[in-house]
Image 1 (cartoon, each protein chain N blue to C red):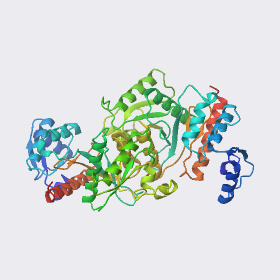
Image 2 (cartoon, rainbow over the protein chains, first blue to last red; image 1 turned 45 degrees about the vertical axis):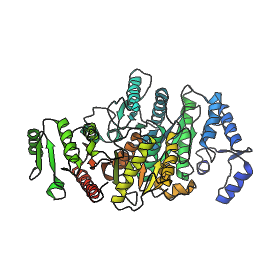
Image 3 (cartoon, one colour; image 1 turned 120 degrees about the vertical axis):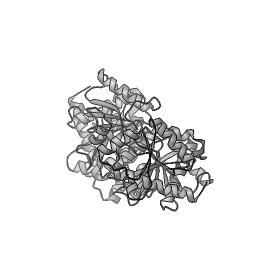
Image 4 (cartoon, rainbow over the protein chains, first blue to last red; image 1 turned 30 degrees about the horizontal axis):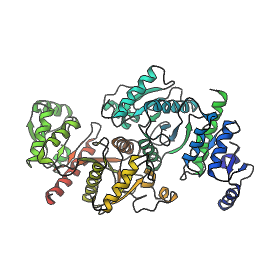
Length: 271
Length: 271
């Protein structure tokens, strides 16, 4: 509603209307000129939102307090929202200890991505960083070590992703991996390990090997690293903001704006 | 050598002596009254160190610039150094954003621990925290979510570890999990998610589901969270400090002191 009132987005609230209005009064929030579409329950809200997005009546989706699975499932079921790419989530953080924004993926959606899913995850993150103005994002494919280790499948995936970028199967980014977290963000750590790389020490995008490591990195940045962030799901025909119950109004407004930027890009660059 | 000169430890340097002396001169380090034991190569150094520790001639081991695998392999091969428990690594961090030290495990040794290995990992971390003065450490078993999810094996392990603590199979700590990173360290995040727990929001120990997530958490704390830390391997008859090439002299001294404290505990509490 903050973003709506500021004229940055036009909000369409799809919800059980009575409950919504009671909550708004309780929270002291003026629903003002937002459109309200009444549905019986959260499941119906998710389905209608996906349907309206497929029909081009909505340019972005933002999760309310329904479950992520509920919304994502409704989107996946809508043929009209599918692209050739797997959907994945990208966080964008600004943190005092790093000189530029850090994109972290996938900390929210794909639990244990396969190599081809990781290729889509990387491509989605590159697209977001490019839209945000990073011409050729530096992508660090993270593992616990910076060497290829047959006992650590994520290091093999990292090597394969780099080769996919060499062959044009992933476009627009400068990839390197496996890199450990320290050599990805610290030039000093990269130098001590004698890593020759155009990505090491100055990554824009950190690609986690799985959901758990991505999720912990993102939450630690926010809770112990003083970072502020927002995030989006890419890979569907509309951007989807997955806000969390613990998010502040500022974070939600930032996610809404990010979604608006992506929607604008999709409109001006039809697939 | 700093810790040795300060009289905090007595250093026994096991190394190819000629090379060692050349390096010491180059680095301007006085080897003073440290014992030096000449060996032909790093492999021999690791073997002799493990042998001397098994023979109670050394009370702790600290890795130099040989590979971690080399030292750990030599220790594993020494029957006299084995305990009933799996060896695991524990980091101890002090970080400005958290009101007490945070122990993170296992960010260095066990790549993809099984449930029974995780039980040992937890027990080792509890022991270290207790030796450092935390009477009943609060142990958060981390996953990407705080609910049990059949598709995320780490959430099942977390539930099993809590029950093992209930049954006395893990002793001395207060366990809860699965917890996501935010609910483990932030009371506010825990409250928003309605998590009723004596661990959530105030964890002493964070148990990572695997090496990758642990490693990324630890390195992020150090590189973006302004944390200073040191770490140790527990589960052998002597503590083992695994310093990294990027560690400062201060970090190494802290690890040496931590090793000394553990060694003292082992001496006064024979298994």
